[in-house]
Length: 198
Image (tube, rainbow, N blue to C red; front, side, top):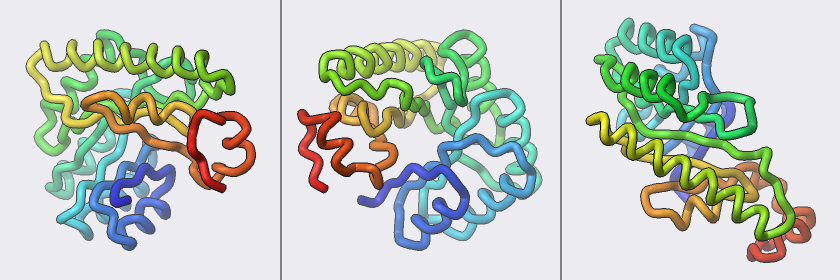
């Protein structure tokens, strides 16, 4: 395993030190010092792909200003909300406009789309599949809109512990397993269809 999704800067630093080739900081940064730390970590590992997410114009503005100030390009994934309402934007024209803003910035790199669906923790397999495939379809349609507008979507990272297989099985998407440390008896009982090993 050489690609990781992290929730905090210390996690990001840990996986980079351990040799991660790709690392995504999947929580929006709104403090200048934390953004500076992100850029410093990316600079410390120039041969790695170190990205973050943005789910509002404020995130893009702060990331863009910091990247411009240090003269360093920063990959940014657009964070999307498909029902959890924790972070991200709805897949609409505002989100398309924000992706365009990332794409046009001289020191930001539009790196793709991110979606976390942790609210869909269904034990029943059919409900779990239905919810995940609904999100997969929405992501595919939104990706097509972005590409039709002349922009690239290099990567789609989506899912959580309950849904990641559905994204991983979809061409052009990367499923992110979520809180793997909780793959214990609960996961084995909640998802008997998955070959979890305690």
